[in-house]
Image (tube, rainbow, N blue to C red; front, side, top):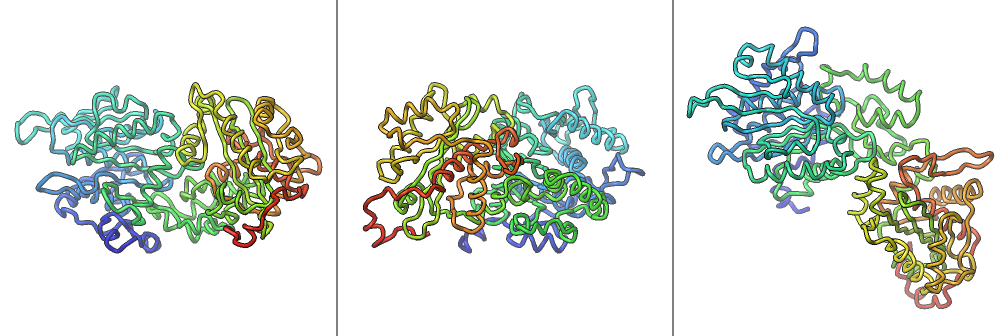
Length: 581
């Protein structure tokens, strides 16, 4: 990115990791109205923490990082226009750093700083329980302060706080309202709020309506230059998906200066660099690296208190370590955790070759095999093409997958992830009325490989023998010879292909294009011992789909038989190879 683009991005903070290591808030220097910022901090500091012995004030209990957020939220207003430079704040912070208390406090500060009568604000919790906790914090903060008790009317049954202080301009009550609610489509009923605080976005993102509701909130706020949206969340306990993934990736791009135009969001991200999170030796397990991502260190949390919990997670299971670290260290769930699943997952990312697409595979391969795996209507239909490079002999893997819309309603836990993958062009979701689209497109791809002369005469297309009658019929009607099709027995008989794939990923003799869907499937794969074999099965892997990976194993099984090169004329390629991967 150019220097000019970096200068234009007021929210960019390229030295964020250095700031975290120094104990500073990972935000740039901002041009703030010092008076407004100081007033907001004074109001914040006076609030009490009601659920801590002695009810200390936020001045005593909160770290300077929270005051920096308050300064940015309420001190970035242009006194001439009333517009905010910081219209949104995205705060990624681990548990036990006062998230819900901070959300409650920011809500009360926003209500006190407001100068517009009859506006509506909202604090949204991911569940009713969290919303009730947040409202309870606000109610207790008000009750502990004589002035706030006079200024605000608390309607416990409505979970609503009303500012009854007189408007200096009219003498009538301000009548500004702050409602605390759980996350559902009714959040936007009755108009877009003037300010909104969302607690635990990663949990909200699992709801099928999440993107629509947050889009409505943001869409209405953009037209209001005074609006403020604050998102406070930890990392997700599953790989980021849906609106949480989108917001997190956007926040990172703003922080890193990749996005520099039309920025309203200030990212405040407490996380370790990707090079540390994803390193194979998992350096983040060293407690010496934890302090930078714990902004309330020495107050609501200490490293010494976290260590026993971490050791308990280690003794429980790798999955519990992954869950614990996502919540307490903001370690993103994914391949970097190296969970006790399929061994090949440890080497998957290193085998990525971004230039490898289907056209490159066809052009550079001397022979190819195809694997197909499909289940019921709530499964994915996976196709994998595995080519053997004509020069290097490396195996090159590419895949495609399809799903019908019904899977989105039957598998709600992964519906948002599937939508993400479809948006990334890694998955095709067949709409209602497209009952045969998946098979038609699959057959077209198989024909493309066949007509390129890459399939061996026998055993070129491997299929799971169950539930593929419609695919077999369609392939033969399209002109794919019967002898080219092969049944690949699943279960323990696929052990050789599974182990072979692991070995070739490890030694670098199998590469892939880094397609997002395949990486997700690899991360989902779990193993189960079966006698002397180790198998990967859908049942063990649970809701997370692995069909395209199983299709890849089918293709590997056939390629392991060392099929004869089917392409007759390689002279042009050998004289001038387009891809010497």
